[in-house]
Length: 500
Image (cartoon, rainbow, N blue to C red; front, side, top):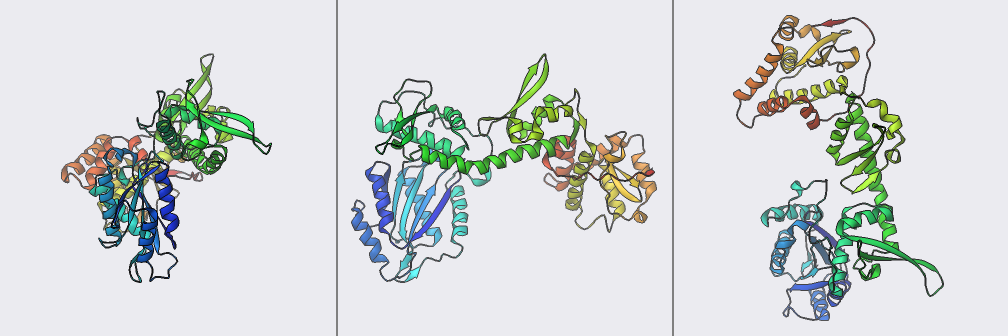
């Protein structure tokens, strides 16, 4: 999904900008929807002369601007010509142009994502030029304001997750009209190229099925006797006459797709690293043992689906389906460490949590909340209050080698490796009797619950205390999902420990 985006470029000569857009009009790929000259239907030479006359006193090398406004796909239905003229005028005015400033607007139809091109002089009058200090930051701020004012899809509501194919994109029936077929095929192919990240023809063809198309190739010899590969597009699974790639707006042929695949390799590497790091850091660091079901559930958090292969009723292999990209990955292709042979020992019939990671995460969450709840207090200046806060929220303090560490009360028989890293608190400032009486009381678990409940009842609806208690009451796993951290394992040396 794409938000409202403004792209700005600067040139000295206006002629190439006008001619580019007018050629699009002649080919039926654009429409001139507004011009501030005396005649809205003036030919291109009149427009060029008008703008040249306006900038004649300036010798700047960047006295003309070319702006494209690109709108979210979800807003296509509301983008009438009048709407586009209004939002363009609003954008230019907020950018700093006077109301009478000359400009021309073209609406382009060469992509499914609706967009307009605005050509205008950067010179306001005489030699006075538009203030372009922080121009791109100002433009970005303006587009965010326009999203709200015109009820467009806002950038804060966008998520990088599974894409929903717009119904208007999907091609399921034969299209008789040649121009309509060209347009719809162009939109569909460009949607896949813009929203997915194939790195090969096989992947590209799999993703094209999402819009009802498929790619076919044919070899031929050109007039210079060179072997070439031609690309054509057709409705998937039909006998419909295919259409040459060169006929489509963006010319998605061999040369274009090679460039697309090359650029996508960087994205693919980032995605594969995300998958590898999530499995190792967020799953295998959290669990000593995990069930196949829980493993699948964890990977759903980053839009992955696991398909297991069974042999004699036992899991023998697995594949990863990326729902964002509509592609299957071979785990060992992402990294050898993810092959089933290398991770099969991690699986069990029950979940065994890695409590060091678990405890470190809880301590991080509670420490952050303590700072929000008590900004004037800290573990340095009020150690007893800090430790009691932790204990009342289920983190049992423990002294080991003269240092303080914590373990969650749910971990009944912790080993040395389960505890958090040492917390820097001066032990001489602690009242061990008060802490011990709390954590060793028979109703300690209910006291933890009651403390969280009291925090909720004492505060208004939106206070940090309520946020804290509600999060805790939803369960420890939920907290960990909301506040992930990476905790390096530090194995302490062996010595006697003193339970408080």
